[in-house]
Each structure stands twice: as structure tokens, then as C-alpha cells.
Length: 204
Ligand SMILES: C[S@@+](CC[C@H](N)C(=O)[O-])C[C@H]1O[C@@H](n2cnc3c(N)ncnc32)[C@H](O)[C@@H]1O
Image (tube, rainbow, N blue to C red; front, side):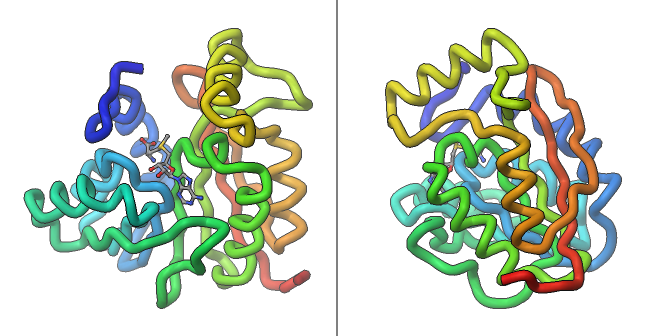
């Protein structure tokens, strides 16, 4: 991946295909929380297409400066933040969210942080709210490509707690916290865009 701290070539490549999927689900005057905004390339591109959507960016405090600088430069009315949100440390920002979008974060966070995220989603989202997880996943413990297997090894070299997550584990936990699987979209470069909806009941 050709990227530096403030620019990701992968985000440039995947933003178009992700937008095409999001368009199927995102309509009207709603509010979205993005977790792990990173370079903010997704947030800037998507908010230009969803004019009525209020998009709230968030990330670890130490990663705020490039996001804040870019948002100030772009001056997009419906783009907000960055809010401080470190899963495992913080609760979601105040207010209600109709959508949560997070790209390439589940494999960076530890599995414990993943489970904290699923629990927070169950606690904070209302019936009908949608969650979008974008990134690479394993299925029944198997990588979907050699490149994903190599990527997983690189991630673990950098941090032993990181690693590509198993789709079935994510699905089981999300169901436990009150969600149902809506769709699992196949995306370019061996990625997926998985969509869950909050159901009416609160199991925990
Ligand atoms: C690989 S980058 C992805 C950035 C961007 N979403 C993208 O797809 O280009 C992972 C992001 O997750 C954030 N992150 C890591 N651990 C996190 C945590 N515990 N809670 C929230 N965000 C976290 C990092 O700061 C970083 O912005």
C-alpha cells in the first residue's frame, strides 16, 4: 500500500466502490459516526455525495491533527469532528446515530477492543440503525487470498493483538448484541463491506 500518514492510496482506490454500496443504504437527513477516520479521505469524499447526512469523524486523540487540518481546509458543512473516540477507553460521542461506518479498523484493534465496539454499538444504536464494517475478513478461519494472509502476518509483526477477523465471530457477537446481518458485499481487492441492522430487542 502506497501511503503516508496523511494519505492512503488504498482509500483512494476503494472510496468509489464503497460509495456505490453506501448509496443503497444512506438516504435523508441522518447522522453518521465514523470510527477510525484516519486520513479523512473517505469522510471528505462521501459527505460530498450525501449532502443531507451529518458525518461525525472520530479517532484517537493523537491522530486528530491531520483530520482537523483537512476538515478546516475543506469546509464541508455536513462534516464534523474529529471527536476523541478510542474503543476500549471512550464511549461514543453524545447524541444519537443512524449509521456507524468504520473502515480497516477491526483488524487493527485487538479482539478485546472489537468486542467492546460490538457491545457499544448494541448499547448506543436504536432499532433500524445500520453498521458498516469495511475491510478484509476470514471465512471459517480461512483467508480469502494469499495477499490477505500475508497482510495478516505483517499486522501481527507490528502488533500481536492485530489481525484479520473471522466473519463468523463478528457476526455471532453482533447478533448477541442485538443486530441482524443485512448483507455481506464482496468488494475489490479481497475486501468486504458488511452491513448489520439494530433489531428491536436489547439482549444485554
Ligand atoms: C488502518 S487505519 C484506517 C483508516 C481509515 N479508516 C481508512 O480506511 O483509510 C486504522 C484506524 O483505526 C484507528 N484506531 C486504532 N485503534 C483504535 C481504537 N481502539 N479505537 C478507535 N480507533 C482506532 C487508527 O487511529 C486509524 O485511524
